[in-house]
Length: 294
Image (cartoon, rainbow, N blue to C red; front, side, top):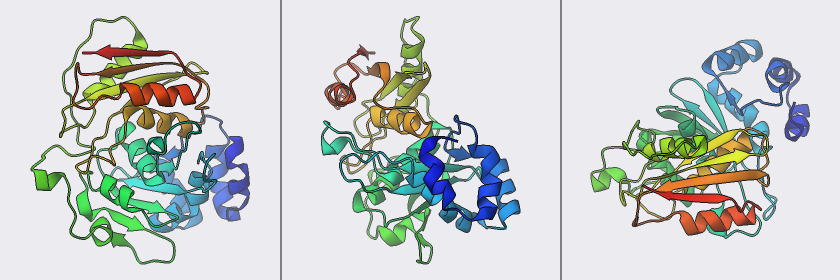
């Protein structure tokens, strides 16, 4: 079991510990459960979907990186596939506050990066802030997304975001988590660059058309990719680097041990990721960034 889960695991009910132990015993636990695993957990613990997600929140929060606030927030996103995805807030010492990732953003992005087509609900241990409500409004599940909070009745995103403004108001038809392929190509033999290209081709940038993607090589040699997730309100947009860091962190890798990175974006984009990406990577002690313009 990854060391970050030990304390949270110890506080879980015995029945849930017993059901989770075979899954968490591997260091490469991906911070998600397949629909089949969810079914087994529900059967063993006799918890329904909502209760299981609440019970798993301490494990999700254990994935937080909070060197600034020391405030741990966990989230669990449930996809229409039946899969469950962890999310946790992330802060980066030495980088600007704008580079932080909220737990809800993390869970949504985690599900998106793993190919989930749509979310049914998200469970979080603290009320989503306005930033996260707007971020989630970009999703193809829209304001119907169910929000579960401790000791509160389940409500929809629309209940938490009345009089919302989002992509539908701008007649955007392709929403966040919809499957896309922008069709960009590069001439390269670098496997990391090709994976960054794949991420760029699946990025969501309907307002600026500034599609971008990144690939990170970790200290273990594994590769983690991230896609740009643009938002109708602009500020809640999530850069591709943060998307990649979400998956890297949730996979148990160290954000301070990134060997190299490749960022791909359109030439002369209206919104460039280069400067912020370079600065944030430098704060993480990674100075090997290749920038490719299509």
